[in-house]
Structure formats: structure tokens, C-alpha cells
Image (cartoon, rainbow, N blue to C red):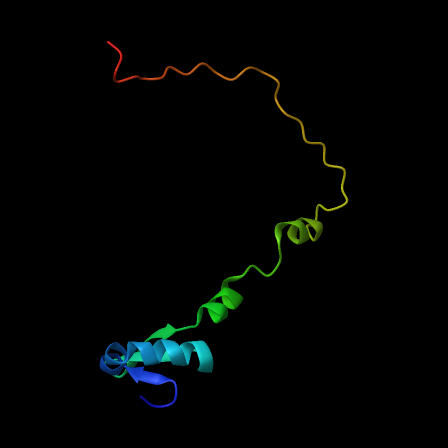
Length: 90
């Protein structure tokens, strides 16, 4: 292990240390056959990078259609009949 890079065998043998370092020191890189294979992140760091940039309300407010007079209507017809199969009926 050097800095934040771990060989796969070291990462397996010292997994608790790897997790501890990911939580406190930032992302840890695990190499396999000398090539970077995966990154281990603390959960807080993972949430930061996977969180949407904006929530749904903000997205809709920034929409090019915001402020236009959209008229949304609903079809008032009855729904179609659906035959349901009951495997226990005779």
C-alpha cells in the first residue's frame, strides 16, 4: 500500500484498515495486477457524488416551459374492462 493505493491482496488482508482510511482520508484505490481496478469511498463521499444536483421542484422551476400556460386535462372516459385470471376458480 502506498498513499491511497492498495494492492488487491493487501486490501483483502487489511479490509478494516482500508475502510477506516476511506472514511477518514478519502477515496482509496485498489489495484489488480498493477492496474487500477476499483475505488473505495466512505459513504458520506458517495452520497455527495450521487446526490442529484437539484431537487424536482428546482428542476421544474428551471424548465424552459416554466411560466407558460400549460393546460393539463384528463380523459374522463371510463377505463377499459380487464378480464382477470383467477387460478383458484373452477
